[in-house]
Image 1 (cartoon, protein in one colour):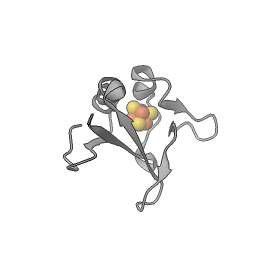
Image 2: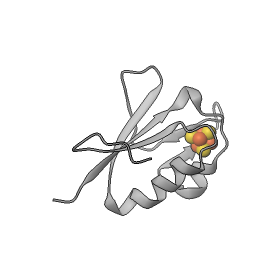
Image 3: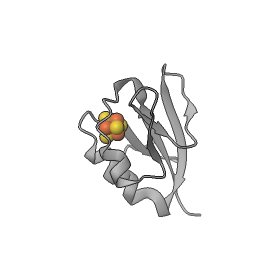
Image 4: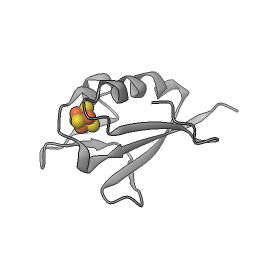
Length: 87
Ligand code: SF4
């Protein structure tokens, strides 16, 4: 079975640099309300303000790119099965 991945956003830590949106404009959409980014299909996490969603292999590369491009490192990507952090 193909591996799935969790994408997590520490939204309170986002400074609105938009580098993530440049890497994957469907998953990362800048909010006109507060200038931070929204994670498409993101569900609230236990940590206040954090969002999480699940992606498959096809979307992995552009989300790793987004995580690496983020100047404040508030995007995290983990393997769903093992929880291993890959970006
Ligand atoms: S690159 Fe990082 S700081 Fe910039 S909008 Fe995306 S999550 Fe926020």
